[in-house]
Every structure is written in C-alpha cells, then in structure tokens.
Image (cartoon, rainbow, N blue to C red):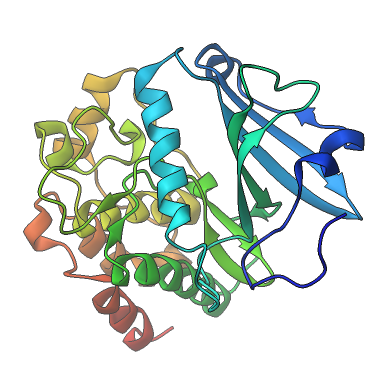
Length: 281
C-alpha cells in the first residue's frame, strides 16, 4: 500500500500497487508510434497520469523523456513544495500487464489536474487578471530556478489545488547552458520568430509562447496556418493583435510579449506582472 507520510510534492506508489489498478490508455495515435504511452487511472478516489517511453524506437522522443525525468529528479530531495509542479513520482522499473518490455521502463507519475485556461467569455477583467497572474507565477518560479520551459502551450498549464502548474518538461533547457539542444524544437504555433532562424530558446521565447497562449485565450480563436513555412510567415511578419473591445486593456500587455524582436519584449516575468498590476481596469 502507499505510505501515508510523504514529502510535499512527492507521490509514493510501489510497483505492486499497480497489480490491481486498471490503466486507461489515452495516448494520441502519433505518439504511440513513437513508443510513448500516457495512461490515466484512479486510486483511492484520486486520479493520476502515468507516462512511459519505450526504448529503441525514436531517439529524439526518448531523449525528450529522459530530459523530463532528469528535470524532475532535481526536486526529489527537496522538502519544500515547488508550487509550479504537480505532485509526482519517478518509477525506475515500471512493469505491469501492459508495460512488459525488457525489465520494465521508467515511468513518470503525476497527480491528475484539469486544464487551467477554460472559456473566459463570462469572466470579468479582474478575474482574467488573476488568472494571468497565476500563470505568470508558475513561469516566474521556473525561470528563477534557472530554466526555460521551451515548449509552452495552452494544455501545458493545468490547475491543481487552486494554483497554476506546468507539465511536459521534455524541451526544458537550463538558461545558463552553453550547449542547448538543437534537435528538439518547440511547437510552431507558439514559436518566437527568432526560433525559426535557429536561435536558442530563452526567457524571451517563453514569454512569446505565453503571449500566443493568452492571445488565443482572450480572443477566443486559434491562430491557423497550413504548414511550418506558413507558421514562420505568421510569427515573423503577419501577426497583429486585435482583441474584443472590452478586453483591449490587455493589448499593451500582449504587444510587449509578442514583439517580433526578442530584445523589444519584456525583459522578464516580473516586468509583465508590473504592467498587469498597474494597468487600470
């Protein structure tokens, strides 16, 4: 059975706990072809996610999973809660009726959480501001610890116990790393213009991705492009900010996050917070 006492942020399942747990596969078909499996399950009236990666199928996807596991490992010995992380556990040799390859694959276990950004049409400006501030807090803590997420998208922000948490750290990079990963890229929908030209991911590219997330959320529409080249054209030349009349108070914020030149964007998350808090509703 699961031990009752555990450090904050850490789950403590044992392999034998999964003997009678029904895992529900919810992986996207494309991810399955890469050896990635994502499951949901319920245990003692709580829901969880379980993520595994088969070996020797797709080197880049496997490298991303290893990167994510290594990112989480740095927090294993920290008694203090890391607010932007869901409760988690790394199982080194996970094996059950479904995952039977080799001696068992490494698995990442996370507490289940809901998508953070739902429909904002019925929310007041103040409610929207509070939502944005919670998002900024999560990214700020990540950056303060010396990391850029590298693949921010709307579904990577989830709500757990009334706070915004981040998931999916496969593209995470150390801000001070001298050798960044060139073979792993962000999602074109959220890529800053400089990334299309091969530049390194930075705090400013995270800010740009967050700006796209907020723009689509506030505007109620997703940006569209047919292919990678079209996304490059949209982000590097064509993107313009237009919000509904009652939300135009956020246009200045978005323009500072979505400036085409990274040096013209906000310097950091603190600067975004300051503007958000001083703008009159």
